[in-house]
Length: 243
Image 1 (cartoon, rainbow, N blue to C red):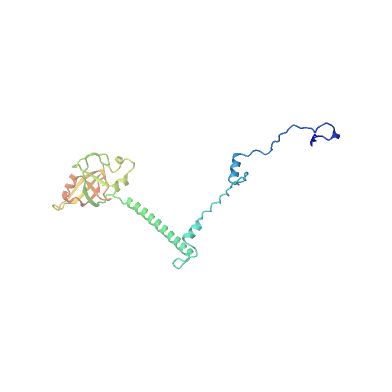
Image 2 (cartoon, one colour):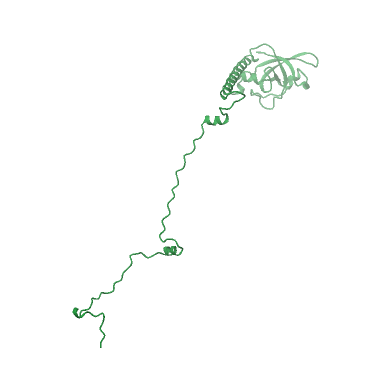
């Protein structure tokens, strides 16, 4: 006896069979995992880790204001302290008073010094003053070369150098050769210690003596030997302008 086909259509539905449909493939809409995600799964990390938050540093703090002059002074000399038993105000006022007094004294001293300097200049033994002047007599070697007046002389010439104080006071230009004292004559007198006699020599100004005082005269060796011994080197004498 034939076995009935359990999947056969019932007799009332005829010989037609159930419709058949071709196999359809279904593709997942989920994107395949990447290697990085698979590796994350292997180490136990979630496959889709949240992005790390971006750190935004706070704005730089404003630079601290530099202390002013008053704050600095308070740091050096606090106002609440006592100084030699006195307040800071009293000490400062006293210091200002002393400073003002010092400035006043210096001003007066400078004024008196300038006035005295002017008086000394007027009292210099310049030509026109026929009064005999007393000073040291010395000697120097005038050559070889030219003196301040531009003259070339030797040791026996009747010449001399006057003090730089006189020479500079009489100067009229930056050229020392044009000094009005150049070529002026004066008479020098000294009592010779060798025999007690007073002798005089007439000499011409040809040079400037930087180490001489206002009334000192620096003579040529030949003129000095006529008044004193060479070994004396420096003697006291008198002199006056001749013209």
